[in-house]
Length: 385
Image 1: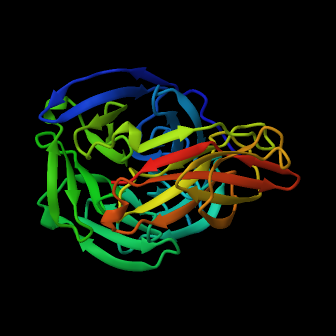
Image 2 (image 1 turned 180 degrees about the horizontal axis):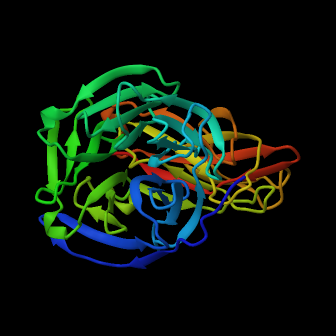
């Protein structure tokens, strides 16, 4: 049974300061004894999830306000022989909406649903690793990177738990790395050096070589740890030992607001909720992009979804399927016939590295077919660069 942690409120406090090009866009403090460890950002719901070491659970806060939205105590995975769990990490699977997490005591990485139930997958990271200090998810390859600070090692697994390789990160020259995320637009990893005298965000290749770093010392972010990104806004989220979560600019390249624009209106599903459509990243040629849809309210619907892509907007009445529904995209391609799980769905697109696509505008919309019910998202315009 799900147990909500109702005592946690995320108190929003806007702060701005800068060092070089890094700026604190906003920050909020998590209260109620919560302790943010690793972070996971969901671009569909705009929630920032954090692994809460204070309650051994996962919590989700609204990104723009910092207010608490949802949360639960982490369930124990059947592979664990330990009497309890010790949460260590969280990352969002942007296609399914499931949350990948880690149990430090059981030494297990596994996925759970956004309402706190086991989703069915899981594997042990021991004896290859001693601990999980950070977790990254690559949607393009359906793989996970698990960081062990003690061993200065990253283990790369597929979703079924098969070890693909290990990566020695001691070549980065840092002994206090913690937190990990994968940036799909650059196909690199970001991690954090939490040493008091050298607090910084590091970019590494997928082979563990150090590429760039950005100092956090002048921003007065103490004990930085968990990390995740939103490439659509160019933001990096960092958790700190002070129970603050920071949203930073000046690390990732900016993605102008006109690159992703919503248009039209959605029509409600069987729960009378308007579904949302989002792209996982800043639209960029030569990258992997996830179109995801759903909402942040559960219980969720079940059914199948269809993605419509086109180059021109339309306004085609779909009242014969459901009153008030409109097709906002002139169809050029129909992608997938995807089953919905948890009211969430998503489809991945490998965008060709074709210079002719730079400046192209692609419109998208998702249509949902439930038993006896039809619903549709708003339209989404993406400008590729």
